[in-house]
Amino acid sequence: MILVISSSLHPDSRSRILASACISRLESLGETVESFDLSQTALPQCDGMAAYGDANVQTLTSLIKKADGILLASPVYNYDVNSAAKNAIELTGKAWTGKVVGMMLAAGGQGSYMSAMGLANSLMLDFRCVIVPRFIYATGESFEGNSLADEMIQERVDTLVAETLRLAKALAS
Ligand SMILES: Cc1cc2nc3c(=O)[nH]c(=O)nc-3n(C[C@H](O)[C@H](O)[C@H](O)COP(=O)(O)O)c2cc1C
Image (cartoon, rainbow, N blue to C red; front, top):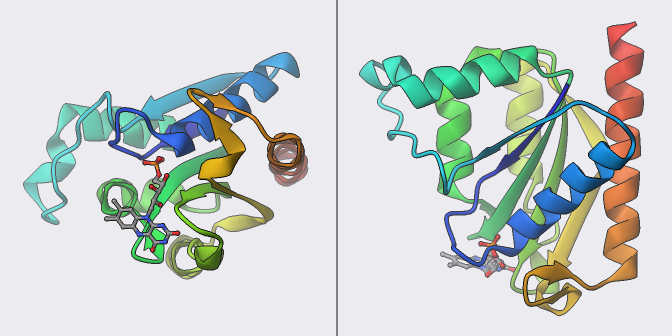
């Protein structure tokens, strides 16, 4: 199973459109997909203690544990993923151990394209995640309304999905 996590809390999020494109691609390939949208299912702030007992945190933790691969969609905020993505990872911690993780970012401009690297490093160091060395990075001009309108970004969606599946299957066998 591939889990797609969308972390933007914006009602008209562009990274959520990227996450949906990955879900559609996975479904068209006949893969089992689960999704978790942080704008739809609220998580508490990580306090390192009681928050771990929250029912939504436990649901996300068990989805992460079951996943063969995880695709994380996030806005770029301050040259990083948003705090909601970071909070979700703080809350679910060790469930990420050894997971294959792919990332996609929506940004305001072209200059923040390395913004997933801080999180990539932390996932590798903390949880020995295998980071898919393909990223999606899209700015406003790649979207029209609620749709992806950029063939190159669609190709990147297809590649990210293909590479995530290839690594997840290779490591599972
Ligand atoms: C608090 C905040 C910080 C941002 N920081 C950056 C940034 O560092 N680099 C950038 O390219 N865009 C930045 N942006 C623009 C967002 O990345 C852009 O609006 C993106 O579409 C947000 O993703 P979303 O549509 O999925 O919510 C920022 C926006 C906000 C609200």
